[in-house]
Image 1 (cartoon, rainbow, N blue to C red):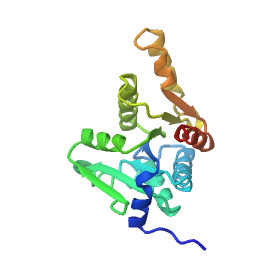
Image 2 (cartoon, one colour):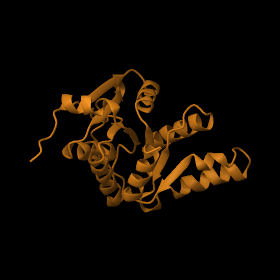
Image 3 (cartoon, rainbow, N blue to C red):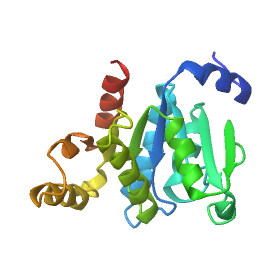
Image 4 (spheres, rainbow, N blue to C red):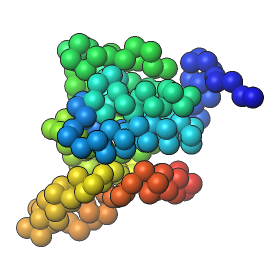
Length: 198
């Protein structure tokens, strides 16, 4: 019989392990598949001993991912700005809980503490985070994988937009290669595993 590590033990254990930054909605969305995918992602991260890095909220898909990681004994690293502590219900029981002054600081701390970026369904905030990571990749500021979890084809319009941008001459074809699409959590796990094995 194995026992779960304490928060402190998990923090030490994850110092040399991979971390995955998850961008996702602070709402559940209208399709139950989004919530299920968020929970499945959280369990998958914990099962692989990959630390969750996210926005430290306890609402919507954000909360579902984090709670699933914790229930499966995984490690968590959350970052939230002061003005969202009430709105997104700052989740103080994380292994690492960091409060920043601004959204810009939040995004920087999250990104700098991750080895890969995964984007689940979400709204304007998730799109903002995605495009910042994509832009930094385009500018050769990082080489981290960026993976869209395409639950029920949620991100198909975004992929079409990126293709449109390339077709209209506002980006090179390489921008499309910077983004990977995972149809489900099993494919997401395989993509992350492959990236981390390099």
